[in-house]
Length: 346
Image (cartoon, rainbow, N blue to C red):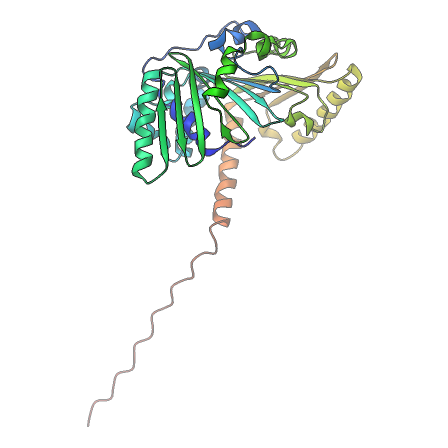
């Protein structure tokens, strides 16, 4: 799902403001109870008809040895935007963003995000500064800062940030347009029964997912992602642990035990084929099992294997950059030979 540039800029901007009153996101127990939490916990605000739910814990991710190793590369990929925000707002988004819960509905391209770790007052001040900078560049920009609501208007549209408390806000988009206060307030007031927390299907799957990992996801079979998948899963769920290595544990639920058995056999065959390929040594440990209607997969990759893949990707990107740069410049023409000396007069 593509979102407007305005929404992306707004999310990056407000992420940068969480430095002043940092508070670690709750975690440790895992499962549905910890993930639901309450309105500020995330799931009570996400619409019940979401077909994908994602949780991301930045604090755990950033404390990992693997993130620290690649942090400079990540920062460089943002093209100086972080430094610009730090200079404007005095905050570092990478160092202080806590966590995010996201609900996505594929049918009408809607997403709702609950972002944790933000100081509301500094958010308003920083948004005003950024808008003034945009105006100085000749861009169309406007900021509305109220007690619990911030709205940013620009040439790409409008996006709103509705605060649930001093450090948590909800935002979102639909059809590449940002949601405003009138659209966000019903989400906050909807109650658990009408949210993801009131969905028996989602909460059962979330309960089987380790929500204490830095990244976790649950998707129903109604999602566009699974509708287009070659295997017809009713749902998928899993989480990614990041330390000095990575470990993914997940499962896909089929309609029957027989379907799951066949899918597991097909996946095992694909994994075996990949292990025999030239990239086999980079793939890490991959195991596929089947229990009832579920196909389980576990992937473990060491830092050395990740480094090898990262190096290969960087090399490919470098080659693509050279190919996209056009023909090499023509060599300079050699200097003209000196003219013959004129004959001396007799």
